[in-house]
Length: 308
Image (cartoon, rainbow, N blue to C red; front, side):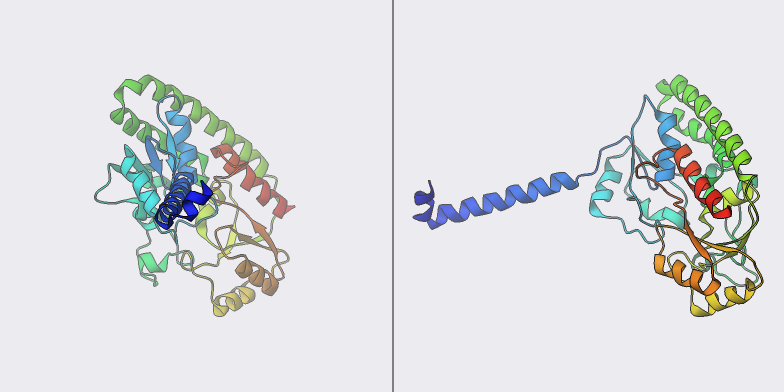
């Protein structure tokens, strides 16, 4: 066979092209994303939707673990996944609106399902200036990172279940049973967290980004300052020096960072403030943080360790 190909350049070229095509196709197959009934943008949304649709539907997540929704660019493979889904669930246009396309199927912003009284607003020190204008007289929009408070999640579950039933009426009994079990899980989780977080001691907590603000409010943890004025934008030297002066008389300072943020910025800030860096992951999505309880318990443990 080798001699035949060697004596026939045309056949050799055809075999070479065929081999390249096989390799390319196998590579495409490895990169193919899972097909699912519903697509969500962020891991926490999958953690909320999974227990509700268990036994009826499947859920896939677009955002890879460790990526930031503020800077994520939708890939062609993700776009194809959106096209094949029955519906898309996302947070809101300011956080992950990149998933909403006019030519895709039905999409549901879950922040709209959170009762208005439960939504936190960005304050002057937390405002996403690029999105909401900034300035003393700005009208601050809702902080979209609602999932860090189990009570807030519980408050939006009934509306979410209504959507699921409307899309799949035959699954009504299953969705209602799933919701009842999930609400019990949320209640138990909230009680555990309230007890454990009540034992933390006082310190000055500096957070880069208000992605865990709902958690801090629910469990009465004071944040001395938020560093990042705009998601995905590193703090300026002027901001860091201002924080240093603001926290100069504090005995103990902890800088709270995230895997989605540049670590060198947190380390530089901690050095200026003589502070400890503690990393929490507001999104999870990789082992061992795969469920909603995993997400909150793992971050609560990191925060407790910082307070010790």
